[in-house]
Length: 198
Length: 362
Image (cartoon, rainbow over all chains, first blue to last red):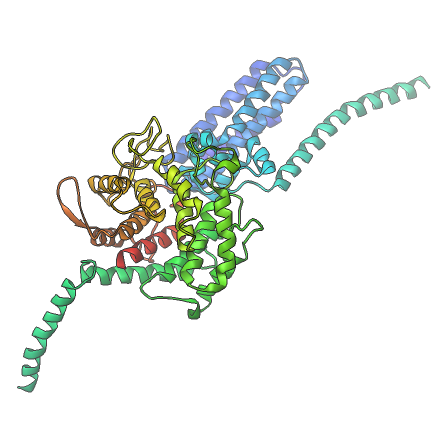
């Protein structure tokens, strides 16, 4: 429970950080490092005890995914300040990491005893799975993936296409609102100037 | 006095009957073990009955449902559709999942496995009403086979193979299951599907005399697919060698054919039921191995085999003893060491184990 608390505390710390122009790249990497250490310790503890492995592995996946999302969020913040090149690299790294989840998180599905929720989540978070679902192609059973990822020999289901569609709509809506937010601010500023002038 | 005389007369007769029946076991199986194996089958079937869903399915999977049904139909109890809903409902569940292309599957994944095991189960009912479903499924499997229609020439290592159904790459495990389904549903022995399959099966064997692939070794065993084994390189292993032997028999190859003899020799020399011989750690695909090993030995017609140390084994006795020792108190079986190939699923593994015992008891 202490480890869970540590992970949650770090996640909360990142969320509550003032993400304005004073936010530096150094602060960002410090937070990422702390969060990564907490996650690794959490992972090690979860794998030691077989009794609680099943529950922990599910929590772990959520933690890892939250971690990745938080880093992505921070990267977006960086892009809006003054570290656009670093932000691009971070977002690219996260995309690659997510695409390859069947490779680096596949063993977790095996160790956990092929829990359906966990296995499906590992498959589902990879953008490859979105493409595979659209094309009706079971890429995890293709020769290369079958040879390099244990998932091909486990039971799993691809998420329904509607799940990906909803996620896509949410992302697009979020980006649109974010862009609109800037416009609204400018419009409001212009409106205030006009009122003051009159 | 009268009682004593009766006992004196009856006891030798009973002993004689017991001795005679032991010697007369058609496949040389230990009678006591045979009875225990039958009880283990009953316990396994009892477990399956308890796990059956309202719609007659197991594990919400067409494939597991078909295997569960087959376990009942081929058991020493001789169940059939007149025995009740626990037999008819799984059939309805399978038939409700027939797709337009003839496949029988609830998912795009595993379409070959699901369809093939459904064919075997439907054929085991002996009910001609399912002929239409079997014809559709047969056409689906034949269309799934990789050939000129998919742009592959006979020189290609994939030619004649059958895969999961969600992609093109074939493997011996899928091919063997498909051939079992085709054989069970009385597919014409002259259909080109067999000859094409034979090419693929031969190309999965480590036997350079009959395998034109550069990587082919010469131990006579089989690998997962031409040029790849999950146990490193192109290493032969138990599950696939039994599947290869069975595939050759399904395709009509004579028992004396050197390909079959080489496979049998590999099984003999690597004989063990402690693990899936040749597999990584020995625990992966263990019950798959038991299942296909029992079916292959029964189909080959060997009651005993001699291992590399010149020890003779009655495989039926060995398999029964092994499976009895691994059965859980609730009648189920499961692979606690590896969930690969769904062996963490009790319903699937129990069905596989019962089918293996059914093959041994025949």
